[in-house]
Each structure stands twice: as C-alpha cells, then as structure tokens.
Image (spheres, rainbow, N blue to C red):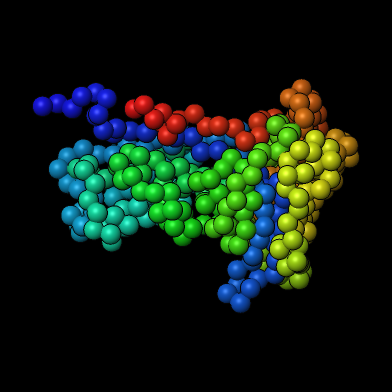
Length: 335
C-alpha cells in the first residue's frame, strides 16, 4: 500500500546556511597541544549559501549493510556553482556527510532508506554565496546544515548531543552553527553558550575580494607573541553588551587576530583604517579575515554606508540583517 502523503519520506531537502561574524574575538597563546583557546561572541548574518540534499532510491542501505565496494567519500557527490571550491572530502559539507555515514556504520544502525548499487548514496548541490577565506564561516555553516539536514532526511532522530559530537570533529566553528543565531563560543569552539543577539540588527559587510589563510594568521599570531589568556577567561557583562546601541557596542568589540592579519596583509590594514575615517565609526575584522564589518541601528544608515564604500573602494559591500532566521526545510516540520 502506498504511503499516505503526510507520512511519505522526503527525498530532498533545501537548506540555507547563514554566514557569521565574530563580533568579539579573544585568542590565547597556544596550549600544550598547540591549540589556541578562544572566547568569541559569534552571530549569524543574512548572507546565505544554499544547499540541496538528495538521497538516492533503491534497495541498498546505509549502515553496517552499506556497500564495502567504496570508501565513504565515494558515496557522496557534491556539485557547486563555484568552480574553485573542492568537491572531495576536503570540502566540509562532504566531510560532514561522510561523518554521518561513518557513524551509522560504526554504531551498527540501519536507517529505513534504501539506496541504489550504482550511484552515490547522497547528492549535494551547493550554491556558494559566502566568500571563501573571508572569515565568515561559510564552510562550517554548510557542514552544520548538512549534519542537521541528514538527521532529518534519513529520519535518524539523533539527539542534538550526538550531532554536536560529530560537529566538534569537523572544525572549531561548526558547533556554533548548530546553536546560533547568537552565542559565546569558548575552548576550541566546542562549547557554545546561547546569547541574545545584539540590539543593533543591521551589519555592513565589506568583502575585499581576497582571502588570508587562517593557518598563516595563527602562525604570525604566535611569531608576534600575541594573545592573553586572562582576556579569554574574563568574559564581559554580556547582558549589558547585548543592550548597547551600535556605536557604544562597536567601541567595545575586539579581534585579537587583527594585528597578525594586518601584518600579513597591509592593504587590508589600510582599507580598515580608511573605512574607519570615512564612516567615522569602528570597523572590525571577522575571524581570521579578510572580511570587515560594522554595525548599525537602522537599515537606512547601513545602506548609506554601503553606497559610500562601493563608490570609493574596489570592494564589495552589503547591508544585511543580524541573526536572521533561515527559512528552509528544517523549519518546515509539517512535511
């Protein structure tokens, strides 16, 4: 008997992955293991990648019964509209899907879906809008949405703690994107404390068009002997900070990676300085760069700033919302 439409299993999910900015980022010197403990207030912003996840149909199952004919990465196929982006397991979205497949195999769980013998088990279409290497967390956002999406698409019903454990193995920003839209991240990124979004609800993003390798930024950070463990451990009064308007809040925000990034890329340092002078307000860098941002209390002011920036510098800039609620199939609980 055919399934009732209300109980039919989905074959495809449409997901939107929001970028983030590190509003406030304190970084300590590396610990004994070589990792840099951090404390960051992160918030999603209205710049989205779009992912479509599609499971195959057939008679083959993921889990212990999944085929041994191929490695897990051969079972995931990614297509992307950005030709510069890798499509193999170096792409975080693919790694997230592989991690789910591996977890199913190792835990001896077999979901109800079945799969064909002669094609990938999962197809991912990625429309890339978040700049690569800009400090906006696009790859991590994609990975988090894949984890949440597969939990829904494969009807795994994993508790969020199970998904968090996988996310922590993929990268320091991935756990935040499971929790968003606003939170304080500590440790190596695996501890996320939800926080109300800031009172200013508009951000201007400045996208210079070039990236800075994160590895190089941290290497320079260490060479310059930057970082303060006490600053990482001593958290601000977040309740007060979330109520501040744009001007006073921007004055308080710090990014400890800026000196290292600016030492590596003087033209980014010059751009930031010129923007601050032209806009008469602080401008911060997100993550390890190269994207810059500043907050506004109303949209008209933000739009005016974008016009001034794009008329004066050969960069992209956009005004968008802070802590948007993505509308996609994960929010569509009726289907």
